[in-house]
Image 1 (cartoon, rainbow, N blue to C red):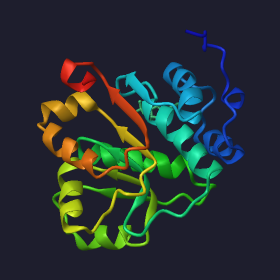
Image 2: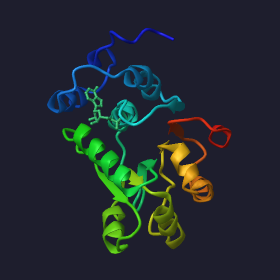
Image 3: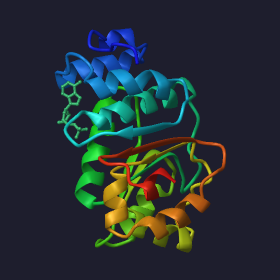
Length: 201
Ligand code: AMP
């Protein structure tokens, strides 16, 4: 693997507006997982990453995703999204959505979060016009899919975060059902702190 310890954000070819947001955030240089993951994801490659929380993995996928969205501008379908991020908990989903908003703040990025335990109405209204990025927990997303209040037909990039935790929480069946709603042609980014064989499959 290439030595990425000296990589700077400006070496990665990221959109200028992203570099501006990173400067605002006070990020000086990419973390190792960012330096390793960003070029491939920007090039449209799939990624299976072993990474713990705290390593900067959210930006490792969010930055190249936002770059790609901006490079190929397109409206999200009504009730749909261009990027789907699945996360095991509402706290993590909210945090990921906040990161997308912070990195995309100079780029007019639309972001929605969907999780259980709250009413459906607000979520339906947020999704109605279509959004660039949807961050969701699996159970509630599946409810919306069954009610046809959300469509995944326009998904170009699919992120599965904390895959091992998803498995431990019994989300494997809902995730399989969600994946059936995704277009076959898409970019897949999977992150897990460990790599059990069930996840590898
Ligand atoms: P994560 O592993 O995605 O949960 O990120 C952990 C923390 O590191 C978050 O608070 C990020 O805002 C922060 N962070 C991510 N990338 C960088 C970076 N390149 N420089 C400084 N802080 C960062």
